[in-house]
Length: 132
Ligand SMILES: [Zn+2]
Image 1 (cartoon, protein in one colour):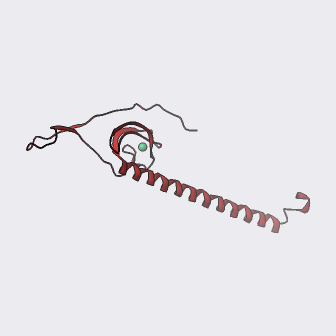
Image 2: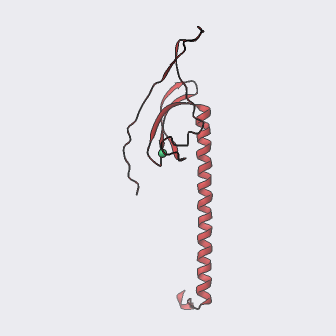
Image 3: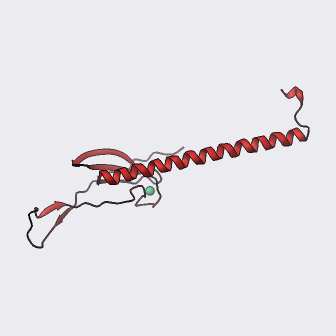
């Protein structure tokens, strides 16, 4: 059984400052760090990161998300666009499909092993009519 350890939640707000030529945009604006592979944990580098909760809607199609690694428990809070989050969702769907296929393969393998064991027991005379 896995032990649930509370993980401290770290929030951060990064601001970038542009010291170049004046533009129509404000001098300070929030930085955007889009990580294409959100499913890869930054701490243990394993592909077990899942969305934990939506903390806030920070803009049009932008969300402050809490992502948690199911392998090491690392929690990362960050703002991500809908496109990146949809890519994470597709990756999680792909992983679920892979797990379902692996489970099906394991079940078929187990059934074949049971059939082989039954056939060997039958041939060796270990199974008698009164067993049924
Ligand atoms: Zn991890």
